[in-house]
Image (cartoon, rainbow, N blue to C red):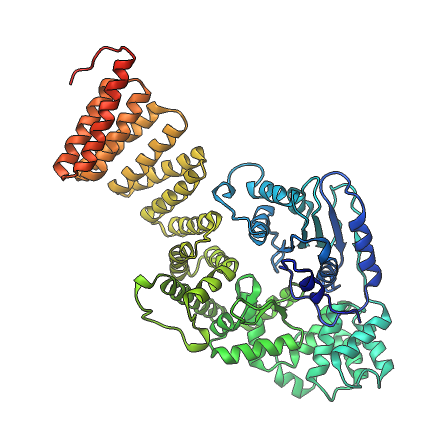
Length: 628
């Protein structure tokens, strides 16, 4: 077995965002050498890209992580990581991946990196610029197509992108992919021996060889078979191999005891070693752990810990944590790097997701699944609210504290948890809003995140943008024009802060229409004022004056004198841009009068100073004195 490379990366002192990697790891010397040779070649065309191709279960991610850590010293600016596919096969856009990678580089994705209508997401250009001046190694895991990779390739850089994929990536010149097949037979047997332990493999070399062959020498199948053998210490290796090689018809003829233990098992699909190795391991699970494994597929991003798993299955946190650890021991879950507070984290392997989804559909009633999702969302709402209360002491004590094992202990702990789980929390919102059957709880989670994330000081505008988009979608689905208009105003404000005035104006105009239709005069006035700001920024003072004037009429109708004074000043500024000087002075005088009635002496003095400055400017230009 090759020596562990995690220590190599640690000794090199580089930032490491890679997954934990497979342990033990064996073989693949030729493939590791091929990646090293490919990395040393000069780049052809745009960027430096290595491609590692193999079927699911071939160990491509484990190999990529292994190689990346072995060369960590060559990439002092970090080992970065982004998953380019969800377990269900949905592709991750290059812009979203770029934001995650920028965050890992310590580059704050600012307002300019908001998603927009441009052909290319601005985050991709920002990542290329960041990589252009660095030597970093970026692992893009489970790439679906070239379109995900091309926008991330930087020119003239010391950084390297390593993409794992199940098929060829066409359309980029100079790619010579490293292709993964099965392990060497000897390595497969050695891997089984190290995973199973004891003398079971060495004492039955024929059975071990047959078992490796039944698993097609594929690492994922071998690990599942090893986990199954560990759970059945009396099962002969030869018999395990025979069961895996058994035709589907014979697989149906299970013993009465096996059928009683797991009545929902289906036959192994002939010719699929990964599924063949999964089925016996799954059949041996106690019913409660089988259910936990199936329900883990409901977790956002299929990443779970004791906080989320206990909510999904409705059990105490220690029991959920023990169940997760046991499933990982059987190779049915993958261990993820621990959270900042030391909480163990796990992930449903993408190679098993499809089969678990089938089992979940066959075994679990829709009402049970909906209840599990509702429990999870409610748990996340309570956690986010708890984090907010810790980060904002002025908000008072938590009226509904979580049980001890789930509790966030301090403001530092709360901030670490929010930032560490940000992607999963946003994924939970997207999942819930997408399904549309738990809009009430999903809306509460969005509101909690919008209150809590800014308290960390690292709330990315793109995250806030996604949350407000979720509010808009739910409001439109529920037929709530006031909430939809409020979401549009917030989205417009984010676009305006990024100087995207045309996109902001579009949002604000939609908010005007919705507010007017709902009879919300205050909301309509707010949106019209924002439309005026956009026209002013775009150099169209005539339309700005029109929008300010309509907003002013609405504010005057409801007696909002504070806002009336502000709008009179805005209207005066628009008139000055149009060289309507008498109108501008008139609006200044009106604003000063309103402020005088409100007793705002300082505001009145400021407006009077603006009017005096305008009169002085007109006198310097030699224009006819305006009447007072």
